[in-house]
Length: 132
Ligand SMILES: [Zn+2]
Image 1 (cartoon, rainbow, N blue to C red):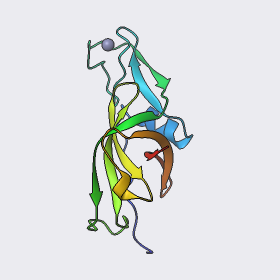
Image 2 (spheres, rainbow, N blue to C red; image 1 turned 60 degrees about the vertical axis):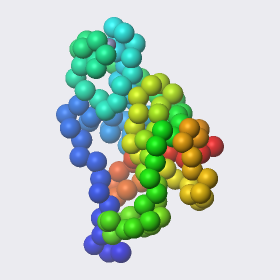
Image 3 (cartoon, protein in one colour; image 1 turned 30 degrees about the horizontal axis):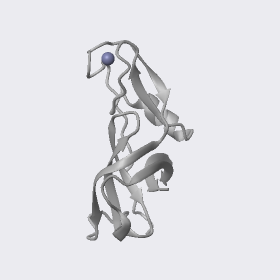
């Protein structure tokens, strides 16, 4: 499929550190220094208490499948069907959208435990999830 490029992230100023860490296969989440909340996507202020004081913390990469869709129709030439995309509820609290990698789509179900793995697209390393 020459000439077909997979869509890749377009970091905002708030998400640049997240994506830079991903390129080193490190999964970071913002955590509030005041109330301890984790959140995603990264923003300048804690969405719980509006504190501007927070740091990046290495996340476990563990979570569970909150919802998902299995694409059986090809909407982009770079995505070979079938493939699954899901909302993953991370152990730390926030939800993140990502590809759910599996060889058996019939086994996907809500609340199934998932773990982070790294998906590669073009020059990017992107978080994705798989069952374990
Ligand atoms: Zn807070």
